[in-house]
Image 1 (cartoon, rainbow, N blue to C red):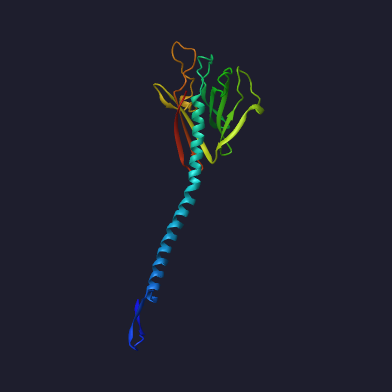
Image 2: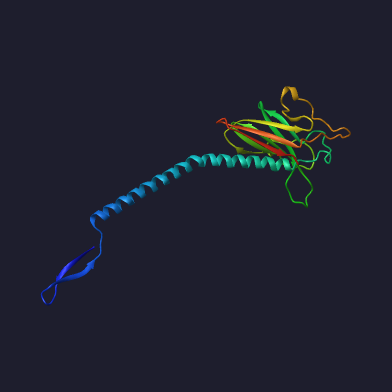
Amino acid sequence: MRTLPRRSSTGHWTARATLAGFTLLELLVAISILATVSIIAWRGLDTLVSTRARLEPEGDRVRALLVAFGQIDRDLAQTINPTLFAYTTSPVSVITIGGQPALSITRLAPGDPDTPTALQVIGYRLEDGFLVRSAGPPMRGRGAVAAEEITNVRVLDRVKSMRVRIWLDGQGWIDPLATETRTTTPVVPGRTAPLVPPGVEISIERNDGTVFRKVLLVG
């Protein structure tokens, strides 16, 4: 700021009103500070966008994995009681399809509470790098199911392998497909129905070598 002189009516010089403003140096300093702040903000935003772009695919894969495990959990929660339905085999079994382990579940079929109870066979298997869920039609009796009646849905991609173990009281976790444990399902003394495993452990290996393990309750 500066004060400029002016001539009065008497001919003398007097101080004029003060003028406010920025000098060139002040403007250069302000522009430099603004440019520095802008660069810092841009680099921070660029880092945030890059991190998000890197983590978003992994987040999608984790969500897909949680959805797949959640679906298996819901199917196991509806496992039938073999005693009530006079089953001579376990409603939860581990089999092989195409040389890969597969999980078979006989569950109560979803439906209206006022309708008669129906059963449904659900299967989980690997096919061309996908975890596939197979669902048979609801049935009120036992019988063969035509291939066209089975619904197959891919629930998880990029799957390299799957391992399924069941919990048996007194034995712990066992792999039914292992040679040393490939025996018939144990039966509780005095009961004709097979013992339903209280828990199932599923391990899924992705193509990148990452292994995810989940323990699920049966019934």
